[in-house]
Image (cartoon, rainbow over all chains, first blue to last red; front, side, top):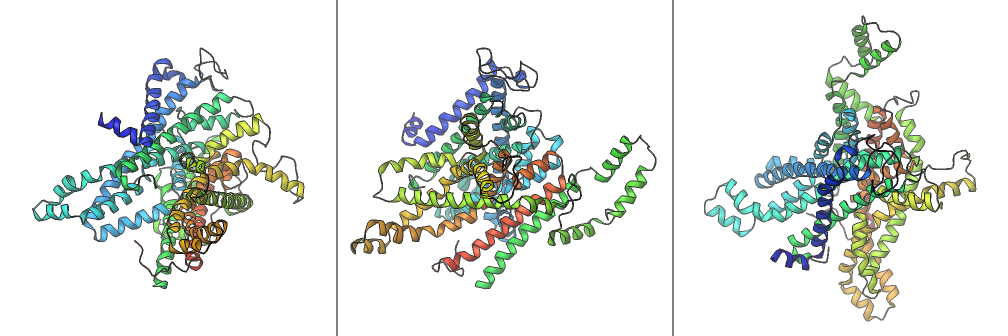
Length: 281
Length: 336
């Protein structure tokens, strides 16, 4: 109940949660109406505009677009969440150890993060994905994306741990004889949770962004109906020239919703994490 | 202090470029594929299959290309090639080197990038300054959330919408390409108008998503500047508020935006690559897209390397000229 009362004050968080819940329901309940099997080529008659039978229409390869977009939302979000979670886990580990133990390890981690953050991630991903182009599937794609999803979380966690480490309560814990692991898990970790949440949303957004970019360049799972591949086929089959508006606008609308939802969620989490900067950032 | 900063900054660029070159060298070698064997087998299949001798041929060609040398020798030779910007040949447009391919299209990309950057920077900064200005209309406040939300969506997604409504439906702009097929790039006024018409939609999609970043950065800086003493003095002197806005507030708030440019450069470039490939605009993005499509792996490696190198160099230049533009920032001061 208190949560809902808080949501009334934090409108952005509420908007983010509402949009993402809607997408979740769409991706789960949608399967009941549109069986996933229809999201693959030659399942239904091609190029049909929206009708009672096919509410979202069908594409040139004979996919039911309702099924395709339901599956696409699920697959694309799964790619992003998987890559984001791996990135967050690696980043939290590196950030913690680098900040807590310092020394040479910290220097190496800091340089690696600085260097990799200067390189535009998508370009590195293009090189890697082009190598394994023929064997890409949603899972391997998200593993590739995870390779560059850890720098952001590492940087956030490192700087937060550095500032937390100096606080009085950590000193007291040290004086009262808590070990390193105890301090990390009982003192530091709980204080980091809001930042970890915001970091996770950030890396999920980045991973989805990159996955769509790679797929648009033709570096995706060719056989799977992800949202990015749907956009790729839209271009490949010249949906524009043929005026197949439903095929173009539906994936675009869902992609916009995903990004808006994630954006509002992260803005809301920011406000939750540091209420002092409320309305300024 | 100054020299140390320069050295460190230059070192970072070197490490970035070295990392990119090293990844480009080792990643392809991690796969079990052997391009020479694949090629020979392919030729053997098309000419009537002959099993014998293929191994010897593979060995012979590997010796010819220096692939039988130890890995570290190959690696240093590769680094040498990269240092001389020798990116090798394109696999699908053979007599051309990757550098020549890039040379053909780079002007298109730089042209549209400069135009969109200039426009989004000036419009976005002005908008941000107005949002933060207490005397501007209240409705501007409500622009903040939509601007931010829009900039969280990839640029080419807006490109898709723009193509559908403005190019396909309203037929106001061409749907793709850099100029009308059949026209001669003769440098005449009509040709440039044609190019401009083709560039408008890709440019708008990039501008639309980058406005928010500029506007928000500017708004933050303006709020800080508005609290300064010289602003109160300017007002007390009875200066016109237009003069205070432009000469006193905006001028001081504008400089840190250049730091923002350095930070967002990589993001801007990748965004533009995707937009170019969507619109078939004949720049680097479309070249990269085409190279991926025809499996021209050498071109893909070369293009990404050149992009990473040029982004690194431009960021370095921005970092170095920034203290010259703003005497308040001294590189010697320790900034955490």
